[in-house]
Length: 583
Image 1 (cartoon, one colour):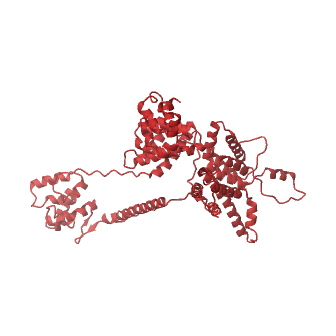
Image 2: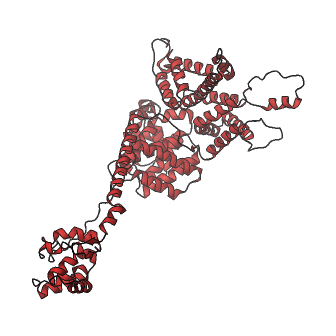
């Protein structure tokens, strides 16, 4: 029914696998009256749905691809139609692998089951071959024995791209507490992959694979070496908010391109050439405009600036020379050669000697400034240029900052530079630059903590190196840290099921934040209710004080915080906070 529908949709739409896995997780946590047995306790609600889902996934996993292809193409004569149906079956199987990986990441499938599936994909039987004739060489038989089912190897690669990071982190955590089976099985799988890809040689001839599969496995090994950072961004389902944001971005880009096109058209070279063409008046005199843009703009302002009648200037130097000397060509030549087109301004009788001196001073200044300032009075006060407003920086949304922070940390863990990582966080958060810096910083802290809780202790130390430097250099606010720790504390008990060292890691993180002065110890009193009631908050606080060391265990204020965190069950075992600390 519903389970078959969900599994089928996940196979058809692999880029929505994470969404369908989240739906299954929600359904597994929801009790159903129709399928749950009434005698079951509330702690086992959703177990029936989970069992039915895993049975359906196992049934799909164990089905032979060749058999499904034969069944799907039965009765079809067209070769293209057969190829289409065969590719459809293979695509469904690949989509099913991705869906299984997302179920594992959502804690619906255990690591034990995954470590049974992975070797089965690598060591799967090949597709049955046609019977050979009696004259076939024995060499061909030996080659067939070395062949593997490449379709299942491809499924292994697809599955590992989804769960590789989580699987290795969980196996390392189990090995640190003495459970080495998972780590050994995973190492065996990687050894087989390296042999298939040709990176590791062995005495016995390894299985033969095509170049396509070999390069696919090499990409998988490279992805693992780089901290499981994909080379290309993988297509995933988009939310409505992301779609609206992309549409707005495209609209802004379209506006910018249209405005730049208008500017280019307005300032084209053709219009500039037209402005610079020589003009011939009715008497046959040629007048060439020098800096024609400035002069043509200023001609209309002659009357406004108090100069003689603008009609005398309509034709530039030639008209003015004729008006001031009775139309003589010699006078025209003298006026143009002595001072250019505007030298004739000194000739009219209306101008006094004082005005001529002012005109001479103006002639000695920059020509562009002179030509564009005829309409401005000389005694006008000088105004300082208005500085252009500084461009405002646009920051990412808090959720985008959280995802970006995880990528920065993954690259840093592989071997990045500390200064570059700190600078990247500073540009990402923008502490104090606007009202959203606290929300961005909180998301960075939250995603960073959730990332390292399932990793090694050395990765936690690297994360703390970056975080403490950001705190000391005021690149993240204290309120952002207290807000960002809420989700890791609330889900700590769930994370610790698969990552036993998660509690110790988070205690180290909180202790370092307190020692750096970013938060105070009493922030534990304002943590989520679930953590304070069911998360063993009092013992968590005691362990944090022990990691801080010094006088932290003897401080009355800290002891008072522990007392407030103690539940009724804690008080039954330890009547006072001091006894709990001493235990």
